Image (tube, rainbow, N blue to C red; front, side, top):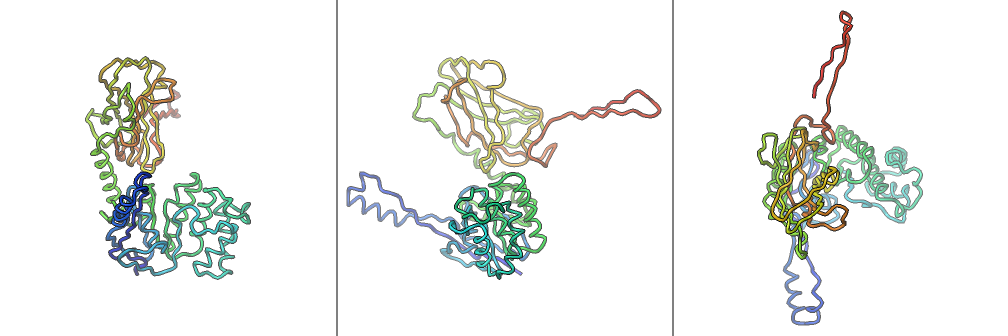
Amino acid sequence: MIDLKLDHVSKRYRIRREAEAGAARNPLVRKLQSLRQRSEQFWAVRDVSFEVARGEALGIIGHNGAGKSTILKLLSSITAPTSGEITINGRLSALIEVGSGFHPELTGRENIYLNGSILGMRRRRITEKLDSIVEFAGVRQFLDTPVKRFSSGMYVRLGFSIAAHLDPDILLLDEVLAVGDAAFQAKCLQRIGDLKRAGTTIVFISHDLSAVERLCDRVVLLRQGEVIACGAPHDVITQYQNTAVAFQSSQPPREEMANQQKLVEIGRLAFRDAEGRETSVLRAGEPFTVSLGFTAHERIADAVFEVFFYSADRELQCQCTTEVIGGRVALEPGAGTIEFSGQGLGLLTGVYYTDVVIKERGATEFFDWSQWDSAALRVDPGKLVRGKFYMPCEWRLTQESEADTAAAETTWT
């Protein structure tokens, strides 16, 4: 049985821009701007079609602005499609954004009953679920406090707990792992897995690609509001990662500080593998080199180079800096290259983006700063494919046999 169906669904928004102050005083220009504004439109979702069977978990991935959240808002009837048809079979519960579905003046307890009533549940059934909802969310101390006084973390914990415990046939989740500590995120993933095994239909949006691959039966990849792939999680996620790296690598360098005279300018950032070949794909736990070109326009006595690695959801994963090497990095006028390398890449499977900073030691201002778009790197499985990072280490086994009192030692790296 099909629980969710989108049939050639599109959603259009009209974009209105404020007129410039000078133009606003001119009636003719204001009229022309008004005419132009009426013709401006933005398609958040365009001609999207897919089905979700009962008990299936569907992941939706894509860059920010791809249309993921719009689809969930269409499915939950927060907004209506411009064209196309949406079919829903079953009781639907959604956690789309912090505070969604809550009345700020009501207490946590009252909001639990409100959400249950909206889902069509009887009060007795909601009462039976109350303790498990509160225990999971960890908000018992604040249960009778108006939720307008809740922190964003408390909002998400209670919102997810309500959505996941009130017996939904269909559960829509948008970035529920983006807020909350690691322990709560693990509880969320466990609960989602339990619901899936119980036959709940799930639509799951997340930048955590490992969670998407682990939980979902199929994955839809969106780009600029259109479906460009739908299929097995590993295949679609790999396509997304390849597309992300190819797109980022094709972008021209962006001038972050174009209006300033730069004493040092950032050049090209490149990655090389264990054989010294330039690449946009490295393997976790294997040797690597990062190379950064630059041009100095005058002598710098003590420069600092920094490279930051971010995940797709803009969370900082790693910082590499010359500030900790203990020696001065003196630059002479002209072009140059600085490199850093390692015997084991600590980043695990995924796509990463970089910031690059060049500054003088102790300074608060930068010579140059290339934000977010210096280069994109895809990391494939290598020595380790699970966890948060790869830790190079040495294993040493020491043992004595009954026949020989001398200890035997074996070492692996």
